[in-house]
Image 1 (tube, rainbow, N blue to C red):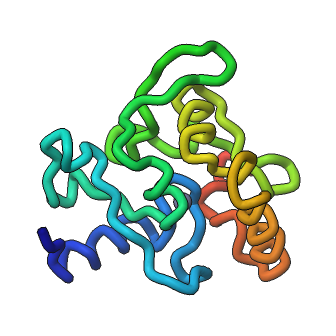
Image 2: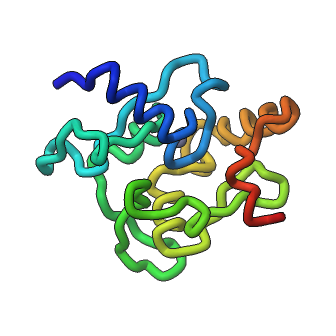
Length: 150
Ligand SMILES: [Zn+2]
């Protein structure tokens, strides 16, 4: 299966060149991001724009074909964040130092843990190190994530 160049471009623009899960910037990455199937192909998901999300390699790999995850606070099984149905700012917020994503709903918390969006379990906190550098560069967090805080 091949995703056409046209669709790839439209998905990139729709996502503002950010991973639709962790909001890392594709422009700050040494490699192009991937296209995550929101309904996994193994469950019948297709290559349509509605079923694809721009995702960094970390988030895509860790989401694998999971569609649900467990909220660490309540042990409730909930759907993983789906950027077509959910608004990022309704489920996530940046920590005061901007290095961590915090979940403000069950979906947010469960998704952060499943995708290890702060590298608490993998890669020895590499994403937090990268975010610190991006903050110094002045391009993190993405402006669109700070609208609510004004
Ligand atoms: Zn990501």
